[in-house]
Amino acid sequence: MPSRKSFKLEQLGPLWARPGLVAGVDEAGRGPLAGPVVAAAVILDDLQPIRGLADSKKLSPRRREALFDEIRAKALACCIAEASVEEIDSLNILQATLLAMRRAVNGLRLLPHRVVVDGNRLPALPMPAAAIVQGDSKVAAISAASILAKVHRDRLCQALHDQHPAYNFAGHKGYPTAEHLAALQLHGACPAHRRSYAPVRAVLAATAPEQP
Image (cartoon, rainbow, N blue to C red):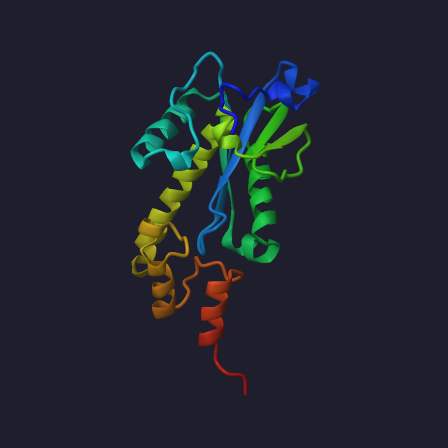
């Protein structure tokens, strides 16, 4: 896999060699059974470099928290956006994720000239954009976005845990761990669960009253 040092945006084509503001975009929370999906967009300031940016999944929680504050302080612009559980259930998780990404870009206080997105799918945007597989390990702005999205969503899961402690959202962050699936079977679905996801749908079907 190309490292950040070896990957240059110019590789994407002549358009990407031009000067201008570039926003990095990433998401957190596609796989969990509960809670919103979160996306973040970040335009970094070349004059205020941030050391240690990396894919959020490769950083410790303490390091992510520290970088979250540093990114918010030093970036030229950043925005965190969500798509709700209801939007996930009505649109599907892919479309809800793209919606959250679009909201994050639209929420930036500065309009980027170009956008790079982690993964292989792009939201509909008014400016040129490129999807970069494993971009959170290759492009600093995408790494920064992944950190903002991950920390924000982890904080949302802590709030969900406070509201619904029986599920231990603070521990598994909504992912379908054995503990979470057991709690779902025992307690049923709470309002934060995604009804369109198979394990939740199965529990709801099992507990639904029989039709006369």
